[in-house]
Length: 291
Image 1: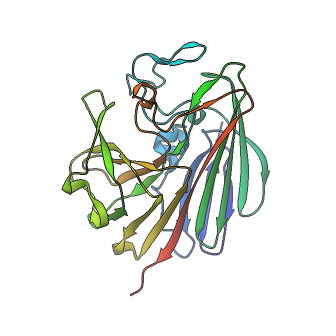
Image 2 (image 1 turned 180 degrees about the vertical axis):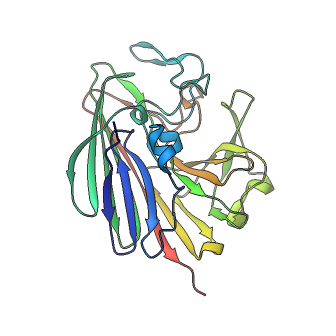
Image 3 (image 1 turned 60 degrees about the horizontal axis):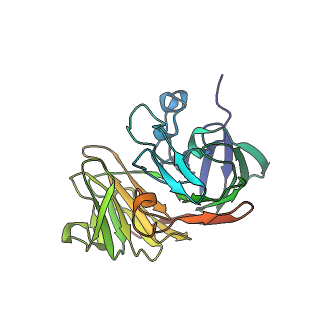
């Protein structure tokens, strides 16, 4: 059965959404010429019905990987198993693998909702709004289970990458990982991962969480004549994923490092009792470059 798409539009851009596919963004384009501002999703990607082949999806109730077969909660052990065929560890929570419902919609905004039971009961809301080339995503989660549980949030946008794509994003440190792709320890920034000034993306694989992020960044696409000015609220960590020899990269605002459930102090996670909520938002603002 074909996937239902929602279309939002403002004065500069157009966005398509697939609520049934994990509340994924499918395509965000410049109206004047159809230029993709997020990674383009073609018909084959949409037919695959896999959010990891689309443009962006919400991360909830955690981001990235969790090791150890689960994690401890005040009520006992929360067991987890792998949730994809491609990864040996559970990854990115459960919201991205669920069908969301449309609560309301206008020409430039949509409010989506999810009632989920796995790995514990929660309600999620995603509000999407376009305004003069600005895409704003707000993710809200309420814990519904009788026993308290740990929560983390994030967004997973895929962005176009060329030989000239540059990133500007300040950070105070980076979580280094072992072969299992789980955070092992936090380190100072190596020179080749310092993006305080606009910097070309690394050619080697990067898949790490950067800490002490003030919540603002720029993604500069000079050859396409524009930049995205990014701002996050409720997030002081970004995960940068730069696969080798690919035409995309991911800049993911998140609330916690990889495998935070097993790190000392569970950095960035929130323990929510029944009825308690958490929230974060992420804004990408399109700006044409002069000249």
